[in-house]
Structures are given as C-alpha cells and as structure tokens.
Length: 236
Image 1: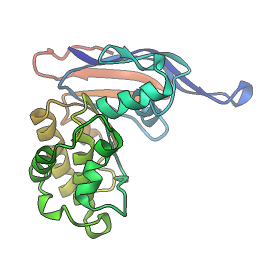
Image 2 (image 1 turned 30 degrees about the horizontal axis):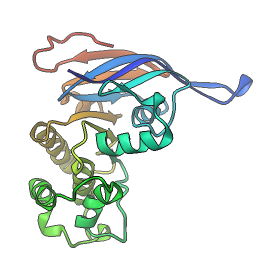
Image 3 (image 1 turned 120 degrees about the vertical axis):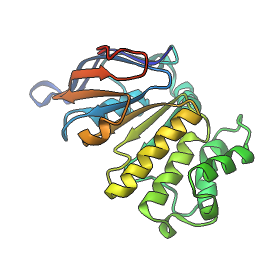
C-alpha cells in the first residue's frame, strides 16, 4: 500500500527575471514500510522536496497525497493536526528544546495534541530501544551528538507517525555514530512499522536503504527500488 504519492510537483521561487525553479515535474510514490533515500548535491532541491512533503511549504503546482489525503486541500489548522498525527521529523541539527530534559523533549509532540493520550509505557519503550532511558533526566547540552540524535528519533516516533522524514540525520555525526544511527532508524522503522524518507548527500549511506531517488537541478534522474518483493522496478 502506498503511503506517499507526488503528482507533477513544481516549486518556483521569485518572479519574472528573478524566478528560480527549485523543483520540476516531480512524480513518485513510496510504499508502506519502505526506507527511501533522496540523494543530490547541495542546491539540487532535495530539502525543498522534503519540506513540501512535510507540509512545511506549499508547491507552486501539483498534488501531494499522504495516506490518500491531498494535503494541499487542508486548511492550516487541519494540516497542523494531520502533520502532528501522521508525520515525524528528524533534522540534522536535532532541534531539541534546550530547557527540556530528554524525557520531556520526547513527550513534547504529545503535549501539543490535547486529543492524544500520553503513553508513558510507550515512551519508556522507545527510550530503552534507542539506548537513552538512563539519560531521560539529562538536558541536550549534557549529551553527545549521537545521543541527541537518538532523542530526536524518539521524539519523531512518539506519536507513531505513518511517515518519518529525515533531513540529513547523520550530517553532524562521525562515521561510527552514523552507522549506529542508520541502524537505529532501520530497526525502529521495522519495529514500529514506519515508512522513512531520508534526504542525504552521502551516496554510501543512501545505498543501504531500500530505494535511492536521485535529484539534480530540481528533477528526479533515477529512483530504483531494491525494496524486498519489488523486483528493482523503476517507479519514478
């Protein structure tokens, strides 16, 4: 079952002679449980694409469907609620709240959503799975980069999103911690049935994913699947 589908997406910044086409005719879909990487050089449009999928920006043209819901048709309030309940974000700079400890940083998305129960048992399970339960009372500045990224992953998973969006999640990490975090993302994705879309400039990291989507100058150039059972089909 497809979780995400993009149809004829374009993103244009500026007007007339200052116009810049950041994305051009983007079409692809992502299956439930798939771990897909978006690879491209700096300025290729990969982070812009992730922002559109996450509902943080709007496409100039085209449609984005998440769980068969066209997010462009939602009001701002509806989009906020939909994003909060269906999409998790992991960023390169972790984006943790410095005044909150590990536990409260992870629980933060649930406290924003008054309609969601704070499942303390699930939070403990996540923190133990990611190896940071013993750090739950520590603050971000007391953690290593790898530990902070683990907290960010736990926070992204705490509301059990259908889609996890990762923007250069290993960009600030050394090679050993990068391997560790990638392993955690894969394990968490399988265990909690997450669909993961990750932006990276690192081709070697991307090749460990189920599928690699290459983007250059705002266009998709290749999107070969190695997802089990998909037979290496081209779906972009």
